[in-house]
Image (tube, rainbow, N blue to C red):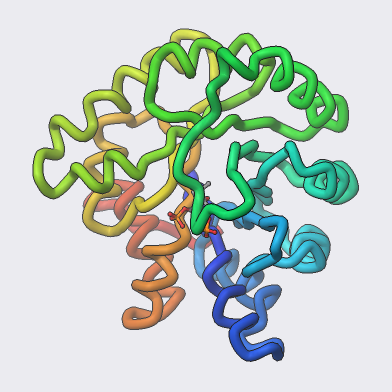
Length: 247
Ligand SMILES: CC(=O)[C@@H](O)[C@H](O)COP(=O)(O)O
Ligand SMILES: NCC(=O)COP(=O)(O)O
């Protein structure tokens, strides 16, 4: 079964825009869980433009579903936070500070020695480690030798190519996913997945462990409501006939 981890970064964007606590990010995490999210994902960035480090601590204490914290482990502050909070999973993303969003995966070959070291630091604390990678078989293979538990396939290229030619768009992801599976790596995916492209992705990569979805899901929820939207995403993952039960 592929788990839906709801990324609530964009709830925090709205909250921060007025300096108060509306919408309440912690309440959104708890309610997303109640509405059927099988995980919560946050991505605290160095400038705390949306998720704050204090949000991460509060959410960890108050949810029961899987907690996935994404971020750049080259920031010591991020490493310290993750070791303090000890989420179920940490997803290591090679962001530079000024990026508007994450836009590339690790070069797991060039960064092999560094990643081996930092992966061991998190695993020593019992935290599952996922490496954010592009859908490139060599990058997946080198992720396996770092000791990481999973890879997260960066799905922006799939999403941007989907409308024009979905078969072409999915091809590198199937190959990368097969490589991950052959090496015993767990498989996550995320970035720009949405209600239109999610089912095709899942149908072609059925052994996907988790998708983390935020931007499109929160945008959809502005029109469709958060509970209804989470259930719609769950049904995309469960198949047409399945009625999903909230977690
Ligand atoms: C790593 C990734 O692709 C996303 O999870 C990322 O969290 C999006 O970050 P923003 O919400 O800051 O765009
Ligand atoms: N890892 C992907 C994620 O958490 C959310 O990405 P997006 O759906 O906001 O593009």
